[in-house]
Structures are given as structure tokens and as C-alpha cells.
Length: 437
Image 1 (tube, helix red, strand yellow):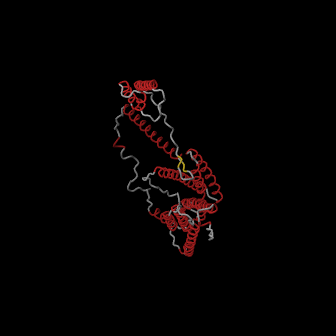
Image 2 (cartoon, rainbow, N blue to C red):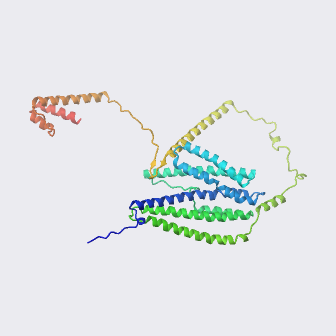
Image 3 (cartoon, rainbow, N blue to C red):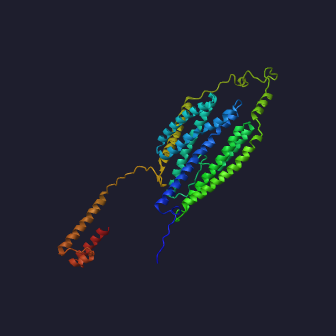
């Protein structure tokens, strides 16, 4: 009987070099796509903050709202730099140096972008300050993410079931952040800004697509990880079919939402709260020139009450005591802050390796010297050794051949002729006492 060999398609199995190479390539592609979505969502969020602050100004220029929004994507530069640095840098001070260089670079690049868009001096100042604040927030959030991952790996290593996961707003695109774009749309409509409404609609669609795709990729990798024990698992097909279905759904949903939004953009109703606030301020103005009710006081009404009264002088020892207590409090607070900062540096130095293990900074070994035995113990050891020597000499004197290793003390004494004698009984008791203590 001839057995016919069947060849399994390489994309359907986890066995084989070619298949494992393609699987690793697909996994790397998904990881890279997730990282890209985690970066781009920061730009979609932060790029809309400064336009909101600008559109509520009384003397705004509607032509600059779109350039201000596009210029806000400069935050992607420090966001990518901070994410890369927090992954490979081990020392906190080196990470702080990298962050400082990123702040300087972002400040310079934002100046070039502002001049290219023709921003005025006031808009340029606000734009640079906004970008700098956003950069600091991204860098601090990266530190928290690293500490969280180190804590996660340490909890897995120590089987700590009390550990709880934490999720940060800037870590990945999440659905609750879509509320911000709804708020942006309402603000734009109430401040008569058509460009702001368009930005809110477009960012809403892009952010929703990024959140949906990121969620799908994370769930797919988690599902494949749970089924890693299954042989011949079609990993490549799972990724391709699932990602293709999600992309098709996002494209269809995006077109279905974008077409009605574009068609109804011309019939939006706007109102300007700035004009309403200006009209209200004009109506509430009061003429203080006549001052018919004499509401303006030229003198302090409490001056006459305290006039002529002298406050008692505080004793010198009270002043010194308060100063000493203040110094003690500041010293204690400084010690607490230093301990917290030292603990933070230790947690920051712990890095997660590629295989998921955690490399922990170990403390120095404590070397303890063994104390010398007391004089009584030395004397007791010498007495036992003296009894053993006496026992060996007596056996060698009475017995010509060497005892076998398997013989017991009773057999040795019997062969030597000591068994049953008073001397042999005394020597046997002493030897057993020296042997077993």
C-alpha cells in the first residue's frame, strides 16, 4: 500500500520556517499599525485644542482656523520621540535630557510652521505655548505608561492577583473621546465658525475609524494568543479576513456618514455668542461720573475702627519656635519627597524585555560574617576528637586487620575482643556520645 503525501498550505500552519516567517511578519505589521494609530490619535486630539481657544476671540480671522488646526499636528514629532525614548532609555535623567531636546526641537519647528502659515505675533505666541504644554503632557503620560507596564510584568512574575490595570487617555484611541468632537461641533456652531464644524466632523470620522481598527487589532492578537496551543491555526487568514472586513466596514460607514454631512453642510444654522456677550456688556454699563448714591469710598471704612489701637508684640521666643518648627517641617517634607523620587527612579529603571520578562535592578548583596565559635564549643569539639582517637588506637591495638566500612561499632568491638568487658562497655558509651552528641 502506497501512502499518498498531502502538502498543507503554509499559511494555514504554525509549522515550518516559511510559515512562521510570514506569521511573524503579519504580527509585526499589526503591531506597527497599532503604534501608528496610537500616534495619530494624539494629533487628532491635540490639533483641535488651540483652534477652539482661537475661535472664541472677538477679533479672530476665520481664514487662519484651518492653518492653526493643521499646524497642531506638529505634536506628532515629540509624541513619537517620547514613545521611542521611553521604550529604550533606562535612566530617567537620560530620558529627561531627551525630552528637553525634543521640547527645543518642537519649539523651533513650530516657529517655522507658524511663519510658513503667516501667523501674527499673538497667534504665534499662543500656538507655541499650546504646543509646549501638549508636549509636556505627552511625555508625562509616557512615563506613567512605562511604570504601569513594569508593574504589570512584576505582578505576573510574582503572581500578584491584587494588581489592577490602568488605562490612560492618551495611550490609545478610545470611543469615549468622541464626545470631545461633539463638543467641538457645538462650540463651532454657537460661535459662527463653519470651518470648526467641518474639522469636528472630519476628526470625528477619522478618530472613530482609528479607535475601531485599533480595537480590532488588539482583540485579534489577544485571540491568537489564547489559541497559541492549537496546531495548524490559520493565523494569517484570521488576520487578513478580519482586517479586510473591518476596513470594508469602516470605508462603507465613512462614505455613508460623509456624504449626508457634506450635503447638509450648507443648511447649518449658526449663532454667534460673542455678539450676544458684547450687547449684554453694553446694556449693563453704569455711569459712575455723577455717583448719585455715593457708592465710591475714598477712605477705608475699617480705618477708623482700628485707628489708635496697637497690636501686642509677639515674644522673641515664639518667633524662634515657629521658625524652628517650620524648618523641621520642611526638612521632613524634603526627606519624604526624596524617598518618593528615589523609589520612582528604581521603578523607572526596571525595563520590560522583548520576551515579556522584567529586568529588575537588584540591591547589593548583604555579606554577613559568621561569628567564631565560643570557647565552650571548641572545648567540646576537642573532647569528642580525643575520644575518637582513643577509640581508634584501642581497636588498632587489639585488631590486626582494618575494619570494613559496613561494620557497625558493635561488630568492630566484637572482632577486637572488647565486647562484654568493662573497658569495652565504657569505651562504647563514650564513642556513641561523641559520635551522636
